[in-house]
Length: 312
Ligand SMILES: NC(=O)c1ccc[n+]([C@@H]2O[C@H](COP(=O)([O-])OP(=O)(O)OC[C@H]3O[C@@H](n4cnc5c(N)ncnc54)[C@H](O)[C@@H]3O)[C@@H](O)[C@H]2O)c1
Image (tube, rainbow, N blue to C red):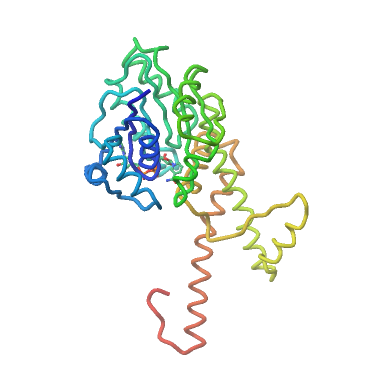
């Protein structure tokens, strides 16, 4: 594994590609957006991430990272494209499928294919089926795995190297091959599993965060009705040795938590009752907060005899 190719050079793909380029790999970054390709080849970046500009510039100048619009042969392929949800909250994996199809002609015996995009359970096995259908001679001869990303944007470069990773292949040989790649730059522990457990693990992490935040958010709305200061309440409740309630807010933050739980809910609607309710509670909390701000504005206008402001 000397030459590695990343499909998708966004908030996750570009930092990972740049870190790999600084750890001995020749890295090709593929992006369908020509502005992204041009910007990176000038040694610049199109996203906001501390310290990323410097390592991208160095890698491009040293010739270890270059961006292109179309895939080319490599020893390892990493899919890091978007996975939004559709109107019905089902995961849209068309980007993953399109990225997968784009590299099929370049795969050869011994290559590693890894999906990093947050994906519904069974996505890796479905992409393996697509690859094997197009290239039956490669069945059992290439390595296919899933390795989700769990970095916090703003601290990506540190967490990419220091966080533990969960790595699941479609068979144990694929898991080991993927471990071999990540061990070149990850200092956190690399945990072995199978592909569908790794997929579910990523969704579980963010569903867990979502449910715990929903508890705090629901509590804040109950306390508002009850005339109880929710912040004082949570501080006091957390004095219990086995209680750890999170802080309420205006919904949830970050790129992932408002999206990923839907991938469980849409695939397992009967079983995922609590996960669905948490997602709805956190979405509702944003509206609730907005209404409270509007009410406060209106009260201010009324008490100060001001002209109403349109934005209120
Ligand atoms: N951003 C985060 O904090 C975060 C954290 C963990 C996991 N993830 C997951 O990582 C994945 C990528 O997220 P992101 O934030 O980096 O997305 P992003 O939108 O920042 O970047 C994705 C890039 O992929 C490119 N792209 C789309 N289709 C392509 C194709 N077929 N071939 C090549 N390039 C293609 C787009 O042009 C874009 O530049 C998603 O599944 C996301 O859920 C994101």
